[in-house]
Image: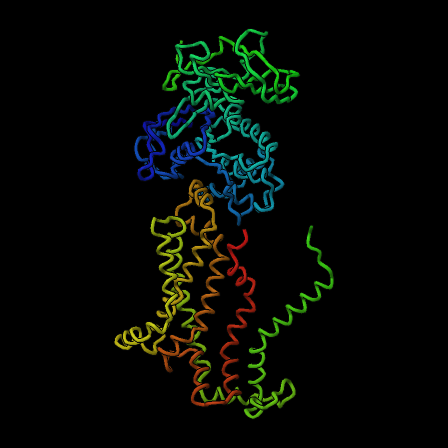
Length: 334
Length: 276
């Protein structure tokens, strides 16, 4: 079991409030991703759950039990660090076994569990190597092995893939997701990469300046962002924001439309503009369009459009996919 | 363009390195050679290099006149004792400053270093009077205390820089893995810190072994280490170079042998932090 509940969790370092009243319910077995810009408090929140930092207020419940006064090791969680944090003087076997050794398990059982974890992660040939003799991806695997071997209530991942190169990151992303589904263990994963968040998560927590802006499934966040921040943060390229009155929607302070929901229309239809940059990716064409009062708009068109800088275009937003926001940034629900 | 290394260049730099190495080593070599000369040959002009009448009588005289073993034992006790005491104090101090720094940690470190900026002779009189009143003059305990205090700033600084290099993540990983502070120390911290501890220990031992100012001023016979033993041949005997050389050779032999076998550790200790 691994149900984690945060109730009004606060954390401040001196006068600075890093986490302001976080309430969250992480269901057993789910994969939850904390995402947000750097400095938003996502790592701090993870460390609070881990017990590496003490809360300034509120409660953290793991399977219904308040753990704020419980030391990290007794919370039944395991963590994978960004730097891997492997013990450099121990072999891969020693690294994976360390937690079990600390728990005082009998030697044959440790041996069996380490072998099983190594097999799951394709580490068996490397068991007797030292971390410095491994590649980045293999080190990452050892760090994950160290986490899974203890059969924790939940895994905590602190930006575990950010030290890997792009190709390996995509591969490890798949492997981590697969492993988590296979084990069925709750996972809390911190990243600043929204693609990682969208692809891996069952539920995403979007954090900004110490506040939880929205908590929901990736598609929910994409389709129904609760406010301007989430709307701008989720989705790539970024959502276009235009002033409501200029766009002919005086009821809303800001109008949001995703690049993929802007169509190139016939002349006289929609918003006129001039292409300033066209990026041809083959599968898509990204148009950066100067649209007068509306500012710079990004349009994502499927397939190849032979438009170039200086061409005049008309962009028509999909009316069903428009997002309307109040002056304070919250979404106007209809 | 990569720098081209021609074989001529290699020869020139190798030659230069040997030359300067020899120049630096020359005084020690000369001392050793002189210790095997007769007093007459020791200050002969022009000096003889290798072709003189080799003799060990200086060593016999030195051993007959003063008790080498007694002084050597004092050196070992004083240098070893002050080093162990300094490590005992410095390890917790450096740990706390490296892993749980406060707002003033930097100031404390600088303050400790600043105590090394004053010439020791500046506090000789107060220290001498304190030692006299507390009956610490010419005692091993007194020397251990003063050498420990004198070297403590360097020891703490060395350990601090060393501990600073140990990533905090690893300690946190150990904590997540269920290690108590004691086990964290035994299984994770100490194995990672051993090279740093070893080089600090060695360097401090050598510094304490060679320390002359305090040992000369605060001890005469009972607690006198080898530095006093050497010095006793310089002043009253005037220009007895050969005996002085024999005494010096005897005094530095143990530390040179120690240094020779641990040079790898020492170099690593002195350059750690320089290269990641």
